[in-house]
Length: 139
Image (cartoon, rainbow, N blue to C red; front, side):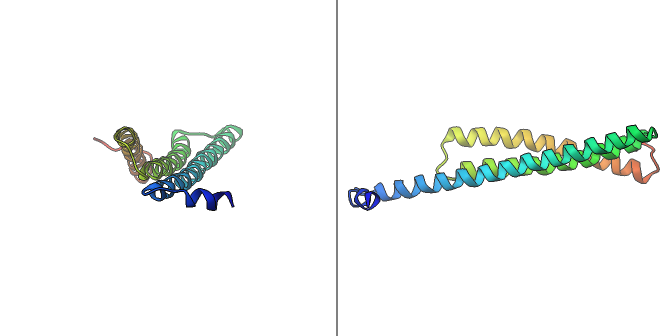
């Protein structure tokens, strides 16, 4: 009843503002859900890495390649979480962004892209080392 009265009193352009505000609220919930997924992915990867380390400690047969294998799996989960986090930032900024929002998103995207690039490069180098029997690739 109250909403019906409030809508009846809307002036020209107020409906668009109301829709934009509702859309912003929905987008913030979607972004929050995506960020929660990123946290879950990192937590899962950390638990997986920790369990791998504990197994190696109890076996007492750890070598560098096994440690790098654990790191590789964890780095892969981190990369996935970075993609989720960037997606959440894009969703949050998609609705009527200000120049401040756009500049923050650009900086965040640049930092995450650099992290993503270097992690992916390390993963590729490790894959080459694993395929060559543990020898590090020559640069």
